[in-house]
Amino acid sequence: MTKQDTPVAEQDVRMGRRVNRKVSVLLTEIEKEEVPDRLLDLARELQRALNEKSDGRTD
Image 1 (tube, rainbow, N blue to C red):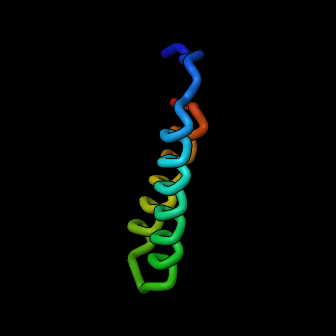
Image 2: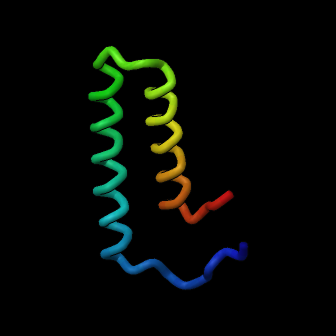
């Protein structure tokens, strides 16, 4: 897959920041609860994937 060189609209960037902030808040809340380790690992993996997507990286 090739990286797109088109600039990201400012609105999209702000939306990405809001989503990442919400994900971070939710992950923090999940970490406070007693949850199975596997579920916590999946939540962290989801956050990493969202961060990579917002940074323009894909695997």
